[in-house]
Length: 259
Image 1 (spheres, one colour):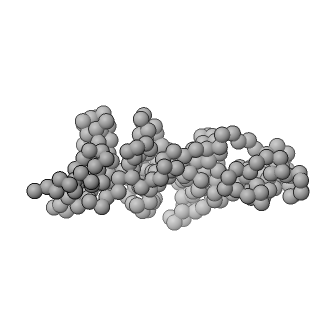
Image 2: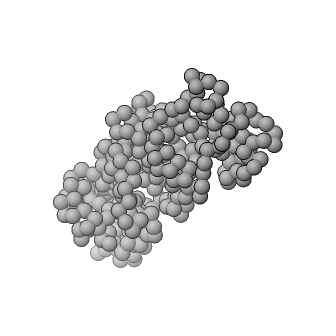
Image 3: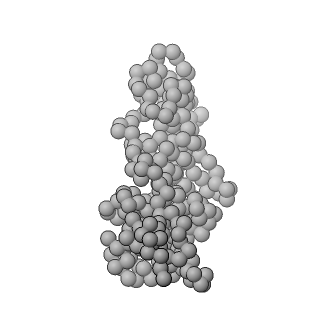
């Protein structure tokens, strides 16, 4: 006989669903309130005529408030780096025009990742400011830059795409780009009512960035069947769990919630 009390307090209770056998410890939502509602800067602009060396009393940080999370030293280093990278600096031949910094963060954003970042609004986008230089992924081919509210990943096969923190929680638990999902092939796509979809080489991630929140992957035959039924517009609604192993261990299932 089913344990009614256990079902009522199980991980899917907030959606009004019973807990499938073996899924008692599944976490439907692992994101914090801040991760569900990322915010960019209200306004941002490059430093006009950045100083090429730190000059007391004449830095941008002496005129403007430095955003929370960054120090005056960070801001001053960013301004000096802006001057070094600017084509109007000491030498156009020395300037790295493919890279840029975004005051008050001194980390450099480069190439296709920079183009993607700029196209979505830079620091005014949900990603906010950079928190790393460009990094090489474990495969030795792909690149990424980390931001306060997410990432941009690039691979020569898939291009550059942003990844939100809620999506990254799913991607991380499946092994990042080295797992079955592989690299992202799109950025987040808004579906309405705070539902988002992101496509990967090996599957798809759906997130609900409002309460009740969820982050889930779906792939393969289950995804194909769901699509044939009408996807989120079907009676099943959106996926709210990763693929779960059935008690026989010979099949899989995904929990869905009709909207």
